[in-house]
Length: 290
Ligand code: HIF
Image 1 (cartoon, rainbow, N blue to C red):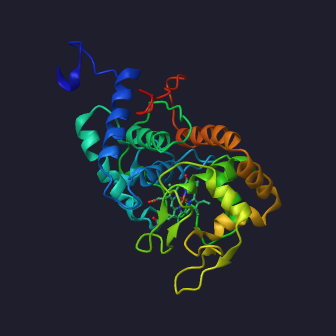
Image 2: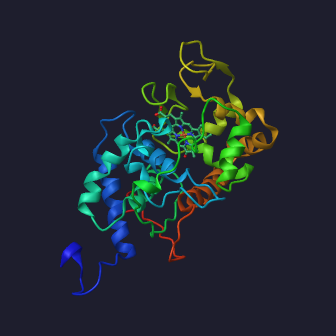
Image 3: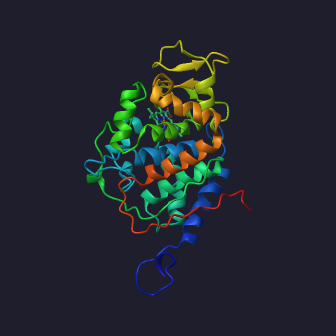
């Protein structure tokens, strides 16, 4: 039967085991394809899942991961999405292997997979997103602008329904990956282990001295000790603002609290605006858990 349908009638209804197979295929591909950036596509998959989700507007109920409208111009060409074609292309063979999964479920599942495979917390995940057409593309300007300050962070993330504590927890994901001059204009990684999920972002933000980088590019900050790491203006806003800073200091000291609170808020991010039919979340088995 078509798509592995086990019954003669009706569409293929995937089980939790089928979604675990998709997870395993993404994890396998992450392990195989190490000839990229710092050795992993994981960080750019996390960025894809977040940019698909972070367009949500709670007032109008528009945007969010449901729809996967970043497949289409104009959304694919929004400046904030520069470089994410790499992540979408990485997932093409997975979509070909499991044609029954929607792009919007696949992109969010892959983000959850990347966080787990890079040593982060479990990201319990729910299926149920449907792909939409180009008419559902969100307007440009919903994703945050890294050149701005705490007011902008609060504007953008409260539009999605997050509070101060959740905003800080989320931004700890900048422990992963790096900035690319040909994508955002910024340059460099946030810490020395950009392919391992840790609370290092907060530890460095709290403990290091950060100075403005001397270069022709956009304003960014560099650590005084080695001059090789970076912080965005929006990252620095987390220690300039008292309401944010207390959480930075807490997560810098307490990795377990960060992992727990990050998991909750990333699950919430990936689910914004999705009309789920099930309350059951899948806790995927990570590839190293035998
Ligand atoms: Fe990022 N983010 N992000 N981000 N982001 C970049 C890269 C990554 C912001 C700006 C940038 C979140 C919030 C914000 C990741 C994950 C998350 C880059 C560099 C910029 C400029 C892009 C490039 O040049 O390749 C801003 C302004 C945010 C709000 C404050 C989230 C919380 C941290 C929501 C989140 O999960 C990841 C992962 C990367 C690394 C991508 C890579 O290719 O390595």
